[in-house]
Image (cartoon, rainbow, N blue to C red; front, side, top):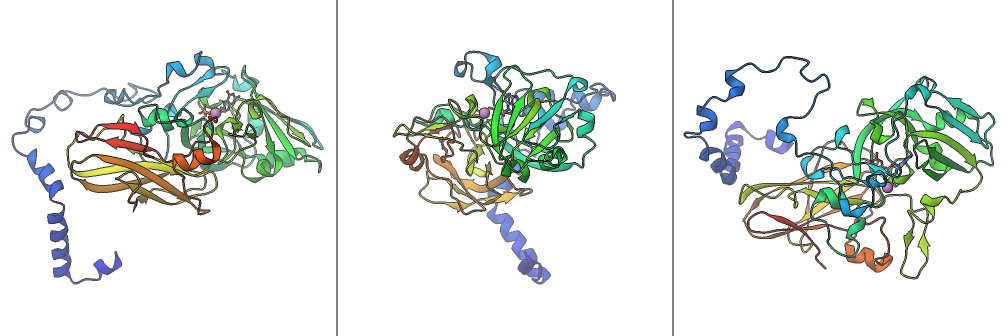
Length: 422
Ligand SMILES: Nc1nc2c(c(=O)[nH]1)N[C@H]1C(S)=C(S)[C@@H](COP(=O)(O)O)O[C@H]1N2
Ligand SMILES: [Mo]
């Protein structure tokens, strides 16, 4: 950048002309619509009549033309919607923040509708002073604001044995990334005074599932939060209103919603969600347990099966997301040929610890079929594995922690399909 700006004016202009000529596809796209375009010449209703006044929607809603941008579920996946999941429409989003109304939902006993006046957070067990907090009490502690991804450990779980669901919303949509406002868990635990024997914490939800998980005390004191706001407004009921546990970088199941109780103990509780569920059955019959951290992962969100290329060949934008439970994303590579050749993608937007990162790759598509892949490298140097590499270590019995490289096949018409390249 500085090299270019230091050039004399004349050669700088030559450079710009040269680069415009090289971007011929873009110039042609713009010129084709200039003459006799009815979208310009015929005045539409929105120009010839007054629109609705303020307050038409006291709580704003997206444009009616965006009505297809919604969470969706896969009805055959679960027997009943109260213990089910729906998926974030990743193919329609950009940047790094998930809008509140589009954050995927995962409930084991439906959405608890908690009255904030009746909400209590009880802390007991191996503490000097057991305490009960109201929401007002919670809001009197110093707050922090942090952007974190939440990924269900079962995200991409249907893809272990091969390509199955035809859309990034369904293969990777059990993730959201919002800014939380809340109180560091450390502050709350210090208020109660931890006893030295306190090595584990049990978090329990107030929903009909009363979901419980054991969390090591080091993590509880490190970066966990009790959050009451997401993206500036109150948590949505689906996300645990009025308060949820935030467990950065760790599997979504531990992020207990409608949080009501924290118990300090000297060992883990071995509850359902850490024994029969959220464990990974290996080929030799043993189960990986307490696989809390979410490994680095990435996926191209567009083009993808729900977001085909509709403009034909020429200038094309590939975009996607990458994240790691162990830190930030250092680099993302993109392949157009199923992993034979890799190009570094362009990361754009803020790079926060344990948050989604956005990447782009702009190129001139010649109209030939593509095998699109992305590969994340995180701040620890860990490289996202291929699905085959992952299966060689973990087998195919597991549902959880599939962070293998995703492939989209794009045909000459720009239509995309979920495939696997071995
Ligand atoms: N109380 C309670 N907390 C819960 C759950 C639940 O069913 N009940 N589901 C867990 C699971 S499995 C996941 S993946 C995340 C989903 O969070 P979300 O609904 O905000 O996406 O919440 C976790 N916390
Ligand atoms: Mo989950």
